[in-house]
Amino acid sequence: MTLRDLFGATFRTLWAHKMRTFLTMFGIAWGILSITLMVAAGEGLRKGHQIQMETMGKDLVIIFAGRTSMQAGGARA
Image (cartoon, rainbow, N blue to C red; front, side):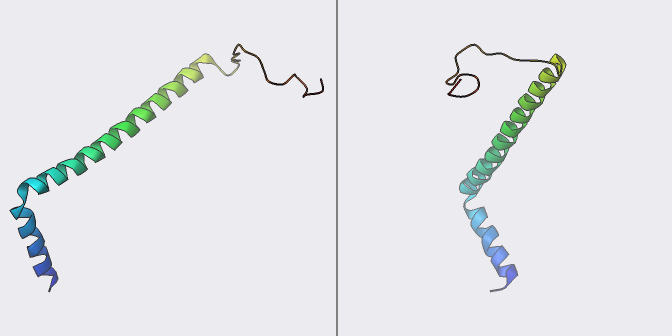
């Protein structure tokens, strides 16, 4: 079987099963689009957060309320 025969058989099969071919191609395109949009949204949020942190300045100290599990200086202090 030559390469030309192989491509011919492939296209005949795809043409015979148009709905299955369409749904498969649609599913692949939908998956690529979904992944692209999720990556773009994540990168946009990351960049926005980075810009927001840069506008606050480099001399920023953030303090959270709560208790530590150990005393300052270790367990013997």
